[in-house]
Length: 399
Image 1 (cartoon, rainbow, N blue to C red):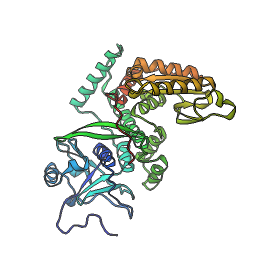
Image 2 (tube, helix red, strand yellow):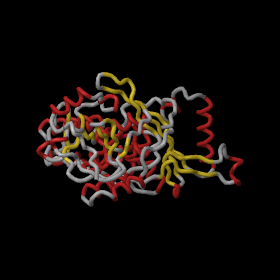
Image 3 (cartoon, rainbow, N blue to C red):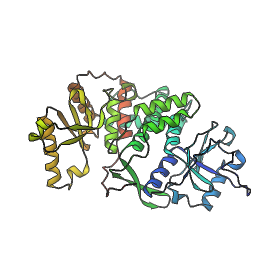
Image 4 (cartoon, rainbow, N blue to C red):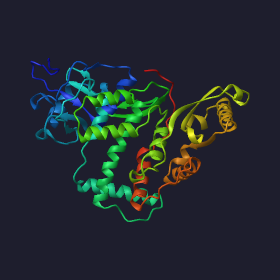
């Protein structure tokens, strides 16, 4: 077996992982650059002597290679290292220990010395990230202050979370983040970098693109990994994620509505997304189109939830508005209940709670009453998943 690290000059290699890999994946995908997948065999992280393992190593690498050209913007950069003795966390790099082998299709080689985790491996990394046994004093204080502020804004007057509660939220947050990223990878939208400058980047969204990964291929990838609690956790992430969501807001909606109450969600039955509704011959006289696709749908209860984004409300034009109205009227005439959702309606916990109660009534489900702590998790979950700004649609791209 030929090692991918064979290097007579003694260079060190950087294996980009976790959130840094996610950022690089979006940037590389936007540029249409696929790189070279390791398809031939299984590998391990290189020995410490051949791996970037110190802040100094990383600074040297960054001085020699233009990492920005591969979409590696934020600092610290997440990198894999072979053992705990290599672990450190600084302003330049943050190291994660990975002792297990990784199967084919785990990395894209973007440079002789730089490998970026693929969407499959990055999802695993986010899902298996081990929670801290305790939070640092600074991190705990920041987390407590954020919870207090969000709860105050939401009108909750309960006691502040304890240290144990904050650790519990850390576990929830890791799971939800991995699930959100997988929804993004399996969706028909993509993040694209704009205004790249001085190691910072702003992100926008393009729509109607091909998914980067599928659930089936991810599951096939996971079958090659050794059985562990982390891989079981990744499978749970795959089960919780949705394929085919069309925007970050649809991802937020689907997850908040379907995640269990003890994670901050509403525990509603999982909707089907981009559900195809065909119009029969007998109903074509009352239909504006023969086939319609529902954003979120509960077919058995004939309920459709449609998210109306930025373009539908700002400058879309009278023809688009008329088309949407005809579509909604058609569904209503065919016996479907249609709920319309906008950003302003669900940007707060109160607003999305109202929507959840309406959906629960329509599907005949009783919402579980959250505990005081679960109400805090709900506020944090909505805050975590809600895109900070309404994305402005860019021209459609096929990548």
